[in-house]
Image (cartoon, rainbow, N blue to C red; front, side, top):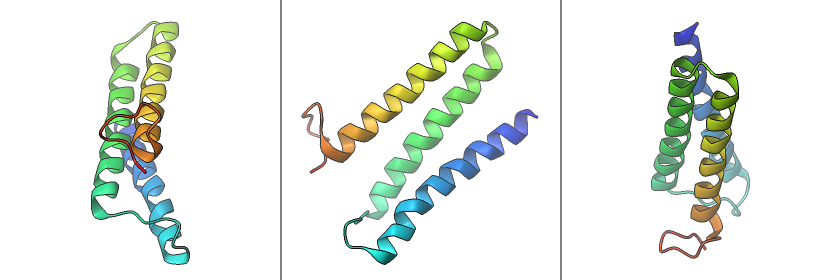
Length: 94
């Protein structure tokens, strides 16, 4: 069961990266470079693996769900910052 979750994390991360790859074939609105795919894949895998670690190690269900929610919020905020720059850091997208 534990290894199935790891495989599922990898498959979901890969599947999510297929969305912009396929979109790039049909429109010029999506223009990702190889570095964009590497960064997005790293973010997705890191969030997934940290969530898996929390699922395995934390026994209190409320604390577990809170940590996973925090991980997802951090992932979303980083993704948005890299895409459009809501915090105006040097890493902000255009």
